[in-house]
Length: 329
Image (tube, one colour):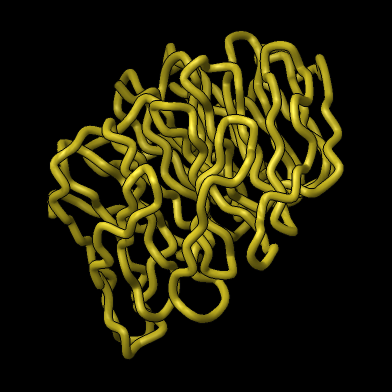
C-alpha cells in the first residue's frame, strides 16, 4: 500500500473513482451531502466541493484537457468544477438522479435515472438538446460507447436497452426489450471490437447482443437476485467477455465471443454475503482486477487473475470523454 485517504467525516460511497487524464488527480464523492473530493496521486487532499448532494450517482467525468470535472448527484444536479481549484463553473438542476456522464467535445451528455438524456453546453451548462426514452435508464450504470465514439448504448429497467447517437442527438433504437429470459434491470454494457454489446442484468443473466440489440446468446449465472448489478464488465481484443457476480458466491465469469463459458473462478468467500463484488472490473496488461466490498469484519480484497489479453477499444463508462479520458487503446 502506497497511501490511503480518509475523509474527516466518513461516509459510504457508491461513487466510482475517476482519474484526471492529465495530472492523475482522483475524484470521488460519498453518500453524504457536501462530500465530493479531489485527492492527488500521492493521497493528499487538493480540494473539497460542498455544493453537491449525495453522490450515490454516476461517476465523475473529466474533459480531455484535464481542466474541468463534471459531476451529477442523486438529487439531479449537474455541476462543472474547475479541476485546479475546485471552484464551481456552473450548476443546473435536471430533477432526477444522474446515472451516466460523457464529455463529447463541447457537450456534456447526462443520463438520468428517468427517461431523459440531456445534452448540455460544456462551458455554460445550457441545455442544447434532450432525448426522451420510453423506459428509465438504470441507476448509476453509465453508458457504453462504440468504436465510432458517437454510437452509445443505454442500459434500462425491465430488460430494455436503447441505442442513441450522441452527436446527432437522435434515438436509433428506443427501449427495446432485449431479454428472452427474465426481464430485469440492465447494468453497465460494454462494446466488443466487432460491435457486439455485452451486458449483465440484476437477475443473474449475462447477455450478448448484436449492434442492433438483437440477442445472440444469454447465460444464467448464480442463483438469486442482484448478481450482475454494478458489475462493470470488460471485453478484450479477442472479443472475450469478463463479468463478475456482485453478491454472495462471487465469481469471475469469462465467456468466448460465441457464449461458451471459458471459466468461472471464485474470487470471494461463498459463505459470507458481505464479501461481495460490486465495484466492477478492470482489464490491464492481461490481468482482470476485481475489488470486493467486505463488511462486518470481512476486509475487502483486491483480486487479480491473469487472462493474457489487452482491453478492447469499446468501453463502458464510469465517467469519461470519448475522445480523451477513459479511452482504451
